[in-house]
Structure formats: structure tokens, C-alpha cells
Image (cartoon, rainbow over all chains, first blue to last red; front, side, top):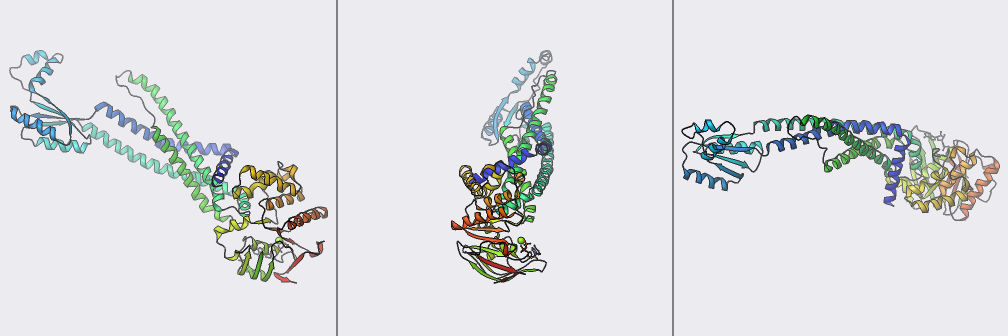
Length: 299
Length: 217
Ligand SMILES: Nc1ncnc2c1ncn2[C@@H]1O[C@H](COP(=O)(O)OP(=O)(O)OP(=O)(O)O)[C@@H](O)[C@H]1O
Ligand SMILES: [Mg+2]
């Protein structure tokens, strides 16, 4: 019986949608276009994030030791690094090896051979467990305090800048989502208000023959939720379309460079969340509308 | 059973539509309420269905004190009442069948058993052939019978009709009165208002007369 009520409400809502196809379609498209904005921004942020991760891997710390650091000191540092809780792995690059590597490079062999003495320092190349800029900075200051370290190089300046930008993007996304969610609620609120006005007679008769407020409310709530889901789906499709367009342009562009960069749509989980969120907003909009208008109709 | 004791109804504008109404209708009785236009007949029926609330006094319908009923309990009271309203209240954008099935949908009936009941109700009022028709294509008498079918489809123990025959010609009137009599014969409490007592051809039934909001006997 409970289920049959819900089916009844669901089909009634669908029928109301289909009964005024143009109005419903316009509503759904408006909702979809509005929601494609935050969805698109979210998609871009995700892509930039994964792309930057691809490019840099995890940033490494290079610790250059003072010239003339003894073997004992190096062994001590090695065992210290092994036990360090924040360090994932490290590699020791002796000055001889560094010179060797330099020789391999094109055009450097002559220059290196002309040296009478190896000017390069011994170095550790360290991967931290975390890539958060804060942790890396802390590690860096810690290593600078070692008596044998001369210089610690951290390639994280551009990462930091990118992170700051991403954070800004996330704030923009939040504001955009809040504003457009509000717009969706308003659109649904108004649609349902008009619907209640035109269904006045039906509502009145239903109340007279024993309909509970829930029974009367339910089709409107389903209507709002269905409209929301459909709007969310349209937003998803708009973003998919844009991705397609951009990707076909990108394939031309990236052939010039040697990176492989293609935009990807939001993940399956995020898509489901998008649909759930938009249907919830539609539901909320019609709930507000029903709550503020239905009581005015008394037989 | 319907029982009024010391019921007063004053409308918000101060008009006193009913004054000190006292009566009891037993289960299975058939009663007419008469009175001139404005006497308060519709008001009295509205009090039974909790469409209006009494100003003072108590109203008992099927052991429920309607005057003290919570708003959320009103729908369940109405499901046990079959009401035929003055001014019909038909949904003209739905077929005859869809109009009559509405009370069953509200109670959550399965489609199959609901359809069976709707056909039985339409059969009783002689509209079985018109279930797919739109109400606008029905005559006045047929529309009135549609309302009766909708009122009885849920098999209520009390049937209330507000001037069901007012604008109908005499042959229809007789038809519809016979219909109510047949519901009465199967044990339904029937309560009908008519504007003038002399229209009644059924002296064997109890008559409550209203005049300016008061019962006169
Ligand atoms: N909502 C209302 N507000 C104020 N006065 C009302 C209201 N409804 C009815 N009345 C008044 O109460 C009196 C009784 O009305 P009611 O509808 O009960 O009369 P009635 O006997 O059914 O008349 P009729 O035969 O014309 O239908 C009338 O004088 C009417 O003007
Ligand atoms: Mg009346």
C-alpha cells in the first residue's frame, strides 16, 4: 500500500511533466545549463590536478653536502634517513657518480675532463612520504640544520603556486555551486507554485474525499526531483559535449608538444553525486513551495 | 451513527448559520434535511465532514468526536464518509473512470481491485458504458450520478448528499432517490438535503427541518 502510493505519485509526476512538454523541457534545460557551469569547473579542476600530478611526480628534495664530508658522516646520515618517519625512499649520489653522469651529457665530456679536481658535492635525493608543501618545507628546514648539509633544494615553488590556484578554483566552485543551487531551488519553487495554482480544483477535491497532505504533496515532490535529475543529466551531457570539442582540438595541439593531455569527464561516483544533488535540490525547492502554498487551499 | 449536541456554528464574519442543533441519527437510518435556501443545510453537512468546525457543541460521527479531531485525522474520517457535494466538484480533465477511482487511489488500492470496485459503483448508478467518457460530455443527471458513484466506491458506512437533485428534472430525481434508497437498504446511513419538503414523495423517512439555522419539528 505504501509502495502503491509512491508509484502513483511517481507516475502522476511523470504525467504532469509530459502533459506540458515545452514548459518542462525549458525548465530542465535552464537547470541543466545552470548546473553545467559548476560541473564544468569541477571537471577542469580535476583534470588540472591529475595533469600536474603526472608531470612532476612527487617533488624531490636534493640535499647537497659540504665538500669534504667524511665517509662516517655519510653513513650516519644514511641510517638517520632510513629511520626517518617522513621519508619514503632516498638515494645517495656520490660526487664521483655525479661527475660520471655529467660526463655522459652531450658536450660536457671535454669540459669535465679538463677539470683537475671534482667540484661537485655528495648529495642525497629524497622522496618524502607526503607531498604537501607544508611537510616538504618542514623537512627542508630540518635538513638545512644538519651540520654537513650545505644546501637543500626543493622544486616546489611552481607546485605551491598551482596549489594556490587550485584552492582559488575550489572557492570559486563553491560559490558558483551555492548560487546556482539557489537558482535551481527558485526555479522549482516557482514551477511548483504555478502547478499548485492550476491544480487547485484537483487538490481541493482530493482533500474532500480523504487525501492526506502527504498524498497531495508527494507528486509535487517527485516532480521537483525528476526535474532536478533531468537537469543534472543535461548538465552532464553539456560538459561531455564540451570535453569532446576541446579534446579534438587538443589532439592537434599536443602533437606539437610531446605531452599527452586529454580532458576526462568527472568520475562515475561524481556523476552519481551530481544527479543525487540536483534531484535533492529539486525536491527541496518543491518541498518549500508546497509547504508555503498548499495550506492555502482548503475545501 | 451521527450525533449533534448543542452545536453552534458562527462564520468568521459573525453570521450565525446554526444555533443549538441537537439530533441523533442511528446507523442505517435514512434522513432528509430540508429548509429554505440559507437555512444552514450545507453548513450542517460540512460540520459532519469536518469541512467546517463547530463554534461550540460536539459532533460524534462513528464514535469519533469530529469537533475535537486533529487536522491530521480528518482525511481518515472522510474516507468513511461518502460525500456528494453541492456544486459537484468533478475533475473535468479526467475520464469518468479516473474520477471515480480517486478515493481508492487515496486509500492505496491496487489497480486491479480498484478497477473492479469502480465498475461495480458505475454499474450501480447506470454509468458503466461511459467509464472512458470525459465528464463534460455527460448530462447534468449523469454528472450527479458520477458524483454518487465516487461517493460510494469506497463502500462508506455513511452517505451524505447535499441537494443531489436540485437542478434535475423529475424523472432523474426519482432515479437518484431510488439509488439512495437502495444504498439505505443494504445498511448504509443516508443523509440527504433538499430545499423543499413538498418535493419528497417518501413520507416514511425521517425529516429534519431547518429554519434560519434552527431545527424545527
Ligand atoms: N463561509 C461562509 N462565511 C460566511 N457565511 C456563510 C458561509 N457559508 C455560508 N454562510 C451563510 O450561512 C448561511 C447558511 O448557509 P448554507 O450554505 O448552510 O445554506 P443552505 O441551507 O445550504 O442553502 P442552499 O439551499 O442555498 O444551499 C447562509 O446565510 C450563508 O450566507
Ligand atoms: Mg447548500
